[in-house]
Image (tube, rainbow, N blue to C red; front, side, top):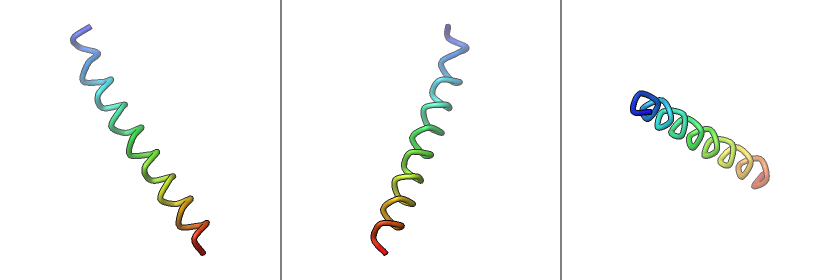
Length: 32
C-alpha cells in the first residue's frame, strides 16, 4: 500500500491540474 501512495498523489495532482485547466479554458471561452 505504501508504494501506491506516491502514485495516488501524482494522479491526484495531475487530475487537479487537468480540472483547473479545463475550468480556465471553459471560463475563457464563455467570457468572450
